[in-house]
Image (cartoon, rainbow, N blue to C red; front, side, top):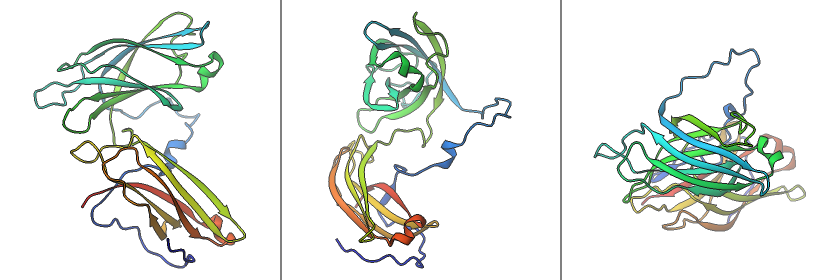
Length: 275
């Protein structure tokens, strides 16, 4: 791996090479962190909906479990050319994404009845810091599954204190490119001031979005050293063939003088290689 000093006067705009398609993993989106104005009238932007989701919540104090029953969905959009869908639901108790549950797939219906219960181990005093994320998908045997929409319950106590079973109906918000789950990346970052060296080790990715008709991808990771919106240097990992869970364990090194550390940032993009 070649290591060279950074020219901070260099200014080249980021350009995608031929055959690269980018996903937005790792990009910071400032608009997601804006606080709601206390002066606002509580008006929300119009959000396109695509059906309704019915679920129940109940907390088991004895066993410290949150029981979530996905009851049914109504008026889902047709995703198949036959005018129907094959829906199923994934559920997370955020911010933890390691524990995920998924319902069975219901064939050829826009009004599936699930009636499946899932249990999340969580202390009662932690419930106020957690939120439920439901993702509704259309199953497709021959290509990647289409995300229909999502429901996010920010406040678990919105309906009751959960001592009794609470029945909830929520609009399903149609999927956007931002809401589709693109997967996760694990990396480590280390800066050695005495040597002026920044080392980013790309460890692995998991649950990446399938980009090929085979239902897999050929992923690699591209890391760019940025300064005031300009790309100064870029490095990339090797390409891992036909996988959605690549393991890299590859170090990417940039030389950055200590006096310039505050002026730079790193952009991490997960790419799918296509010949």
